[in-house]
Amino acid sequence: MKKLWRTLNGVRGDATTSQTDALTADDFAAFFRDKFEVVHSSTATMPQYDVPFKPMSGMLSPSTRLRH
Image 1 (cartoon, helix red, strand yellow):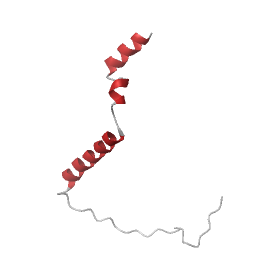
Image 2: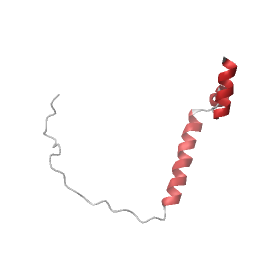
Image 3: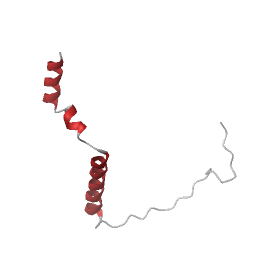
Image 4: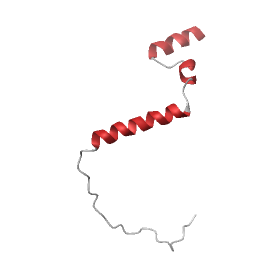
């Protein structure tokens, strides 16, 4: 049965345990840092979007008590 699952996982392209064991927290951080840099560099020349201010009624004030 294990061989069947290994075969199916291989066909589906799932990573093996030995492939995922090699990943570290630094690898995880580097992936997102690199992803952020790619997105940032590809959007750096875009004009800045001006988000219009829209006052909202019913917003909490510092003196508003929350009810449970």
